[in-house]
Image (cartoon, rainbow, N blue to C red; front, side):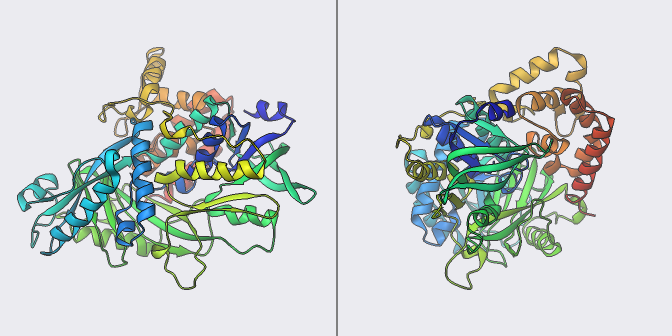
Length: 515
């Protein structure tokens, strides 16, 4: 990829800054339209918000309650397309809303039936009221006192970082160039119009001057930093909100059903969703003043989730039950009116073009990434006077596409690549050996991640190529030294690199552990 960049001294059609959901979506959109496209990410792909979601591909039941019908319709359509385009990563998930008050069942059955109708042919199943007996059969760990049954509805569940990696691979297969650890440090202008970027390779310090017909700013919570490189006096267009999730053992919600609590004390919804043989519980909504690459959960957020979950589960989760705690920052399109709470700000996206031609996309959510990409490239095409071509991503299968994967197979999320990893494992007894039995990780996965998925650091592999850090932070720290040794051989690094990687990773993993 870096050779590609060095060899390409002539202009790129489109340079995209940011390798999260919106940047990757726009990059794939651009490359599949035949534009010469470069994507630069200052850290690792999906390092920020895009690897820290609630793992849901959803139309947004909450947005329906807020009356945001257009966003719900868009998200329901995109949810269906994500499942069609990456069936190895997106699966149907049944949710149950427990009913402890008489009106809950009729109220939500009615609302969710409207939700189903809006999904049309791309629906995942009918919403239905469930009896007490049926509800407890689905979720035996619910508190029985005053429980009247529940309402079942259907949404999607996925692996966000893995989806991002497959998006990136699909982008490259369509002629794109993507580089992680390449930080954009400046915007270059010709006659007052943006004509490219200055970027620094974070590994070597090498600086690149890159010419582009149009630059797209898709840096999530950091979009204002790039906007200020263009126009230092600009007002902030992003409002940052933090969401925290706790990961618990499967015993807390033992079956394949998820729980959705529609109204918590802070007015948000709380989910408990099965994921990789664990349960993700969240989320919170706390406004943050500054955007950070590695946000930390606040004590009150942790207490809030534990306390709220404990009100509905027979075994109340304690701090000692938490396998990992992770925080993500949402880039919400800042409202123009004053005093809006972050949970009330629309999850819709916005696209801005500056006087100098910088195209910025902000807001939105994982489910609508493709639509955001399509609209962003439409705008970028006009700015760069490129040929306006039709989008082809709506029915574009992503790298790894495989129908009917076995969710009990620890390699299922690789889709069609799983067989290639197994071939690697068969080629050497050493590579077939297990790194973590609990997390189902073998050594061949490390080699695969370095050779085929651009994993450059220990964190890349343990947090995003596999999800070890989020599933069990202590276990991920335990296998870190062995992973670092394998990576060092592949990356031709020395003992000093190994030690630095281990120290950095252990320090990071400690932030995901509750003491």
